[in-house]
Length: 117
Image 1 (tube, one colour):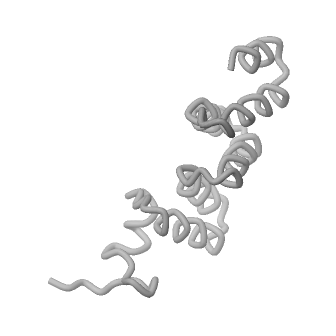
Image 2 (image 1 turned 90 degrees about the vertical axis):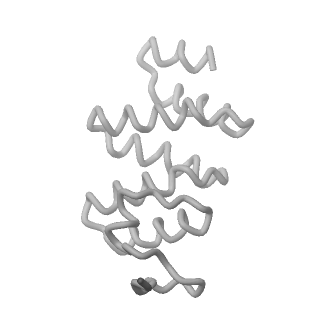
Protein backbone atom coordinates (compact mmCIF):
# COMPACT_ATOMS: atom_id res chain seq x y z
CA UNK A 1 0.00 0.00 0.00
CA UNK A 2 2.86 2.35 0.74
CA UNK A 3 4.22 1.98 -2.78
CA UNK A 4 0.78 2.76 -4.22
CA UNK A 5 0.58 5.92 -2.12
CA UNK A 6 4.03 6.97 -3.31
CA UNK A 7 3.03 6.44 -6.95
CA UNK A 8 -0.04 8.55 -6.30
CA UNK A 9 2.03 11.34 -4.73
CA UNK A 10 4.20 11.62 -7.83
CA UNK A 11 1.10 11.79 -10.04
CA UNK A 12 1.15 8.29 -11.51
CA UNK A 13 -2.54 7.52 -10.90
CA UNK A 14 -2.72 4.51 -13.21
CA UNK A 15 0.23 2.74 -11.61
CA UNK A 16 -1.15 3.61 -8.16
CA UNK A 17 -4.53 2.12 -9.17
CA UNK A 18 -2.82 -1.04 -10.35
CA UNK A 19 -0.91 -1.40 -7.10
CA UNK A 20 -4.02 -0.77 -4.98
CA UNK A 21 -5.91 -3.40 -6.98
CA UNK A 22 -3.10 -5.91 -6.57
CA UNK A 23 -3.29 -5.32 -2.81
CA UNK A 24 -7.06 -5.89 -3.01
CA UNK A 25 -6.40 -9.36 -4.44
CA UNK A 26 -4.82 -10.17 -1.06
CA UNK A 27 -7.84 -8.94 0.89
CA UNK A 28 -7.09 -5.25 1.29
CA UNK A 29 -9.85 -3.82 -0.89
CA UNK A 30 -11.11 -1.01 1.35
CA UNK A 31 -8.53 1.46 0.01
CA UNK A 32 -9.60 0.66 -3.54
CA UNK A 33 -13.26 1.21 -2.61
CA UNK A 34 -12.41 4.60 -1.16
CA UNK A 35 -10.20 5.46 -4.11
CA UNK A 36 -13.05 4.67 -6.53
CA UNK A 37 -15.48 6.84 -4.56
CA UNK A 38 -12.95 9.70 -4.57
CA UNK A 39 -12.51 9.31 -8.32
CA UNK A 40 -16.27 9.50 -8.80
CA UNK A 41 -16.54 12.54 -6.51
CA UNK A 42 -13.75 14.28 -8.44
CA UNK A 43 -15.64 13.72 -11.69
CA UNK A 44 -13.44 10.91 -13.00
CA UNK A 45 -16.25 8.49 -13.84
CA UNK A 46 -14.05 6.38 -16.11
CA UNK A 47 -11.44 5.96 -13.39
CA UNK A 48 -14.10 5.07 -10.81
CA UNK A 49 -15.73 2.55 -13.16
CA UNK A 50 -12.37 0.96 -13.98
CA UNK A 51 -11.54 0.44 -10.30
CA UNK A 52 -15.02 -0.80 -9.37
CA UNK A 53 -15.14 -3.24 -12.29
CA UNK A 54 -11.72 -4.58 -11.41
CA UNK A 55 -12.83 -5.22 -7.83
CA UNK A 56 -16.02 -6.89 -9.04
CA UNK A 57 -13.99 -9.04 -11.45
CA UNK A 58 -11.86 -10.12 -8.47
CA UNK A 59 -15.01 -11.37 -6.71
CA UNK A 60 -15.71 -8.39 -4.46
CA UNK A 61 -19.49 -7.84 -4.40
CA UNK A 62 -19.56 -4.41 -2.71
CA UNK A 63 -18.85 -2.49 -5.96
CA UNK A 64 -21.87 -3.97 -7.75
CA UNK A 65 -24.40 -1.50 -6.32
CA UNK A 66 -21.97 1.38 -6.90
CA UNK A 67 -21.51 0.29 -10.51
CA UNK A 68 -25.29 0.03 -10.87
CA UNK A 69 -25.80 3.52 -9.48
CA UNK A 70 -23.25 4.99 -11.91
CA UNK A 71 -24.72 3.08 -14.87
CA UNK A 72 -28.20 4.30 -13.97
CA UNK A 73 -26.99 7.90 -13.72
CA UNK A 74 -25.45 7.47 -17.19
CA UNK A 75 -28.83 6.35 -18.55
CA UNK A 76 -28.07 2.63 -18.90
CA UNK A 77 -30.97 1.30 -16.85
CA UNK A 78 -30.72 -2.20 -18.33
CA UNK A 79 -27.12 -2.64 -17.14
CA UNK A 80 -28.01 -0.98 -13.82
CA UNK A 81 -30.79 -3.50 -13.24
CA UNK A 82 -28.46 -6.41 -14.08
CA UNK A 83 -25.90 -5.11 -11.57
CA UNK A 84 -28.52 -4.42 -8.88
CA UNK A 85 -29.77 -8.01 -9.28
CA UNK A 86 -26.23 -9.36 -8.95
CA UNK A 87 -25.74 -7.25 -5.83
CA UNK A 88 -29.04 -8.51 -4.38
CA UNK A 89 -27.99 -12.10 -5.11
CA UNK A 90 -24.99 -11.45 -2.87
CA UNK A 91 -27.06 -9.91 -0.08
CA UNK A 92 -26.47 -6.24 -0.84
CA UNK A 93 -29.85 -4.58 -0.53
CA UNK A 94 -28.60 -1.04 -0.97
CA UNK A 95 -31.53 1.26 -0.39
CA UNK A 96 -30.51 3.79 -3.03
CA UNK A 97 -31.43 2.06 -6.26
CA UNK A 98 -33.07 -1.18 -5.29
CA UNK A 99 -35.84 0.19 -3.13
CA UNK A 100 -36.83 2.63 -5.85
CA UNK A 101 -36.80 -0.14 -8.43
CA UNK A 102 -38.36 -2.89 -6.27
CA UNK A 103 -40.04 -1.27 -3.22
CA UNK A 104 -41.18 -4.66 -1.86
CA UNK A 105 -38.07 -6.58 -2.89
CA UNK A 106 -37.81 -9.58 -5.18
CA UNK A 107 -39.45 -12.94 -4.74
CA UNK A 108 -37.49 -16.21 -4.82
CA UNK A 109 -37.77 -16.39 -8.61
CA UNK A 110 -36.30 -12.89 -9.03
CA UNK A 111 -39.53 -11.14 -9.93
CA UNK A 112 -40.64 -7.96 -8.19
CA UNK A 113 -42.62 -8.89 -5.09
CA UNK A 114 -46.12 -7.57 -4.53
CA UNK A 115 -47.12 -5.69 -1.44
CA UNK A 116 -48.38 -8.31 0.97
CA UNK A 117 -49.89 -6.23 3.76
